[in-house]
Image (cartoon, rainbow, N blue to C red; front, side, top):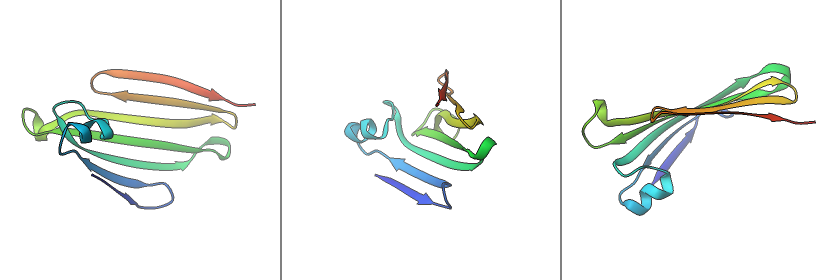
Length: 103
């Protein structure tokens, strides 16, 4: 199951819990993980655009500090009216950087 609470125009908090393997797959969790918490927020960016940030924390039952297995983030940051930089990373480790250029 998943619960999402919207706190404003684009700010939110979301909690997801999986009770079996099928639920884990639907929520995008790896084998030891059973739960996640996600925070999302946005704000005014350059040239009339809007930046967005999503931060996720994933949990397992035992073995790590507070059961945290990994932490990840996704960001979209407008640089100009027609150029947006997208960055995503997590502590597994992985990093992805891209951009959108419109004309």
